[in-house]
Length: 124
Image (cartoon, rainbow, N blue to C red; front, side, top):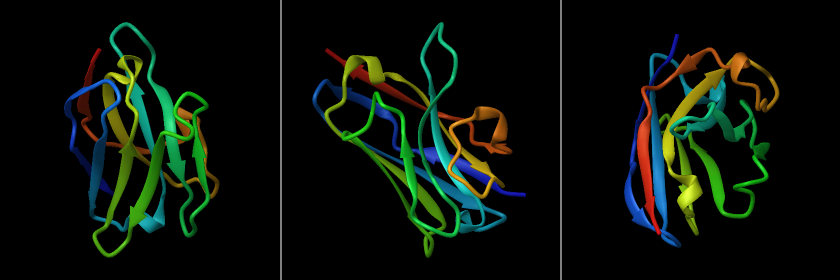
């Protein structure tokens, strides 16, 4: 079992950048396919980005492609989400999740462990 804790959220102006971190304990992040999801008020949680376990294959939602980058730092046992050129519609609670899937999946139901979330607010 892995325990996930997100950090790095906050308030940023449109066009700015934030870097979210997800620190894992209990198991190594390289043992899991890791993903970032987000949920805005009144909306369903949606997939943002994922990185395959035991490799570097990544997957992004179309809405963030070219602006967000997911990465894994195995020595620090963490996964990060670099978010650039933020837009007001990126505002949401961002969740880190871990999946035992061997592929980079965007399906929420395939993620087994979740962090508590971190708030990202983007002002226009």
